Image: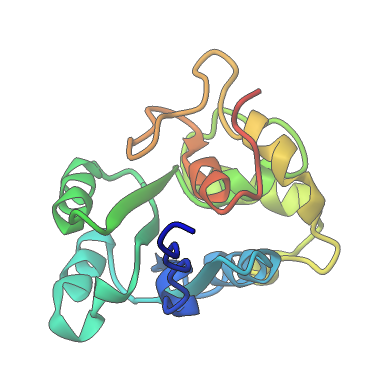
Length: 204
């Protein structure tokens, strides 16, 4: 009889095996409401998702996440969800890359001109919005929300349309923007985040 083979090591904890994901946004209401719902959809035992709101512009978010108290070492992936809102976000994307390490990837998710582009895509193809107000007006048209309610996600929001939204959250002539890029026109890179969480498929 040959030597006994060592048994597979079973000492790894669930935390070590689990893919830990932090999603940060500066959207106090709309984005946070949407992302909290998405977190509840991730029911895989090997993925743990936390959402966090930080007040301020995109560069302020980077500054806060660089502070020791942020302790990003606990996460394998960090996704920072912001609006373009007429600003050049190239420095923001560079700073996201600077936060990445060998064991942690930090991604910037940008919606042009704002997060409503992604929400609108759940209802149908997005338009070539001229500015944030234009996209928000279309959101109110689609949802029936009043101007006072436009920061809310309605109760009958079509959550099940996320896969379709991933195919219509950009202008057909442009295609889906790449990961960690700033779209040139009405579009969002949100599908890459949901793809990472295995909530949408980008292969088609």
